[in-house]
Length: 429
Image (cartoon, rainbow, N blue to C red; front, side, top):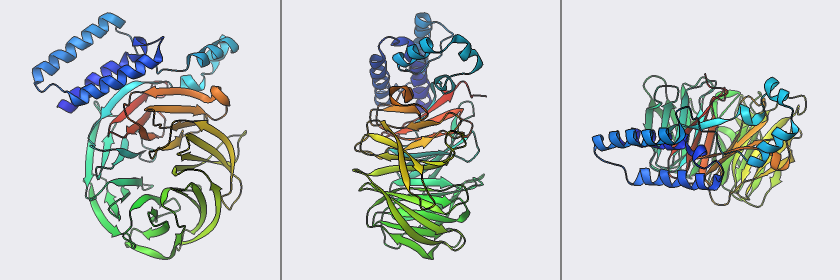
């Protein structure tokens, strides 16, 4: 009950935050962070006091700002002015800007079922509602976000240490997860969730990343702290013959080519991105080449085929702890990468993740940041014009985020364990 009350108060304050500090965005950021902190640290215990406080708070905000207020996220004022000056008004009637299409309107809901950092979020495939969450508290959770109110459907317990990554199967009936306890777990998540299989890492090494192979969901690729990439058959619980490759550095991130191809990329703690080739039928793995050498750890990798006349080739996104998100072009069938653009964010210490917009129609990139904000970039633009929006609400570094498939919701998770669900009014049904 106290959790629901906290979420209600936080959402109420976040709703009015843009109007509260419309001319001074930094004040609004500071206010909502401090509000979040106080609500979590000093909740009222008596139900009657909570109810009275929420009603009084709502009445005061209504009198101050009015009823028909929707929080518009704090957008760069100079960018708004530049658009309004240079683009005819008729343009806005005929076609909305990227910023308008992705105007996530405040905090729709806040989840706080996790007690440690939320390291990964991922909506189920082609599913608006089911959101998977992985935390360093050793649990995974599944949330139903279209319910009224959104709710936690299940908490998956079993890992003895922090969960580092997970992935949905193509049919969404299974989840695979990796952990610092040196195990891979396979979970059934339909109707009555339960653990189906536990597989120990052969080197008893911490496992930092895992993913289903898109062309064969019996196979899972994993990366561990000993620098070993391995292919596991989750149906049998056996690592495949010839399905391992030693890279010599801690493997922090993985991504697979999703178009039926055989390429896998791995990112390390020393800034190396390596391409590998997989025989999906047999599970045999071979190293191709070191495609990039960066100055700091690679914490997130994403591959996407871009359906655009302007950019017909596949693209590749890398989060690196050098205060930047890097966008590459996949240059050949060996997985070679050619740098296209670099987006500055605050990223030095934590495992920050970034992602592509699912439908790719707006060329949008979203990333967490150690400044507690979610940064949205339009990759079709350069310089300051590329920054579409900033979402504020977290009081700690934002580590994980995920869009649902129709872009009506964006979920973000932070270092403290808070998960915020943002609603896109333009896409919301």
